Image (cartoon, rainbow, N blue to C red):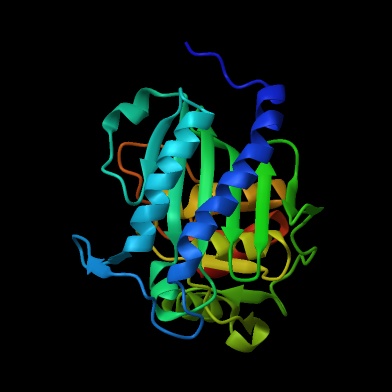
Length: 271
């Protein structure tokens, strides 16, 4: 059985990872046009979702650099063909080179680069970089979460009344029905990048983030750790926490919230 990364090794890795994330953003940024269409070439993947040359370029860069940082780690990325051999690995990089591709190509600011390093099936390191706004969300398991180097925590709210909630409209409508009225909470415009949606729950600017079915590991793993370390949880509507590096990396509908709001949301959802 391979030896896990030591605490010292993880600490030594973080400055290098920050530098890699910045370089990745430098690759993507020239293709982005705030408020306008990307300059990158665009094509459709199987299933119809868009991909740009920026996604591919960032993915290729991260594959080389992250694999050099932790050579024994396997790889799972949105833009790389899946290698089932990752299932047998203790360490796995999980990468979304551009989370929120549709936002990126249309000039919306809420896109990000998300990287997680799994150990034994759970995130050990999570890093979400939002180039527009220059926000770095970081977490190492057991060490708390930060935004641009400053510690973050979820909001201390314990009741849904007045909560700031974001997500797909059908999910918001179901929650409103369970609560009794949508006026009992504040609806925040949906955040296209799932990683940023979770990260903003972590920093307290959003109270509840809802995620429709079919999100993948790469959409979630990095920000999941940031949220956990900030006092929150990502779980299914059965209350079960997310699991990663399964044969099929697809998830069902999910809830991201402070621990204190998890049960009130689940109760309203089931009414």
